Image 1 (cartoon, rainbow, N blue to C red):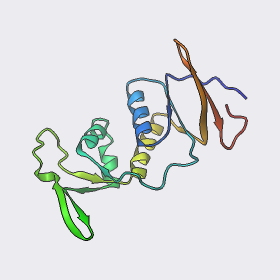
Image 2: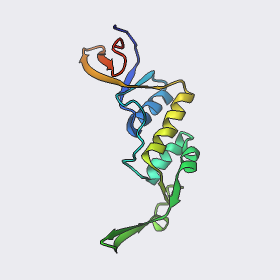
Image 3: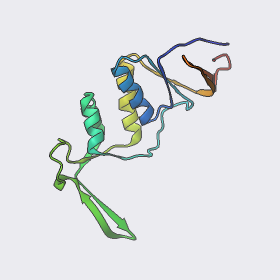
Length: 156
């Protein structure tokens, strides 16, 4: 089966980068579609801390409150090797007057993705899961993408 589903931008991958790209593009009025080959969002976390600059981006989109409810603020991180402190960072003492976020947010990547998926769904954008891009062709005017459903052979 072949379908012709047009969009301005196709985001391949529903990790935090793909989800944020889709959210920002939609925020600018771009018709976006998201495909992800995984059957469900990641449960494990490949990232656990969000920096002040990232928090500023989420705040500019009105999403910082949703993040804060799922994370824990911390102002200090210490680094240990074999039980001994070898260094650390105290973010509340950083000379960064240009940010209201003088802390880090400890938040699992999965929670960050949940916030973005929820925000996108409020805009009518949903991740199409179990869909793998198998090929694409580009010409001067557009890109054609071939994809297959990993659990529905008639998709594509």
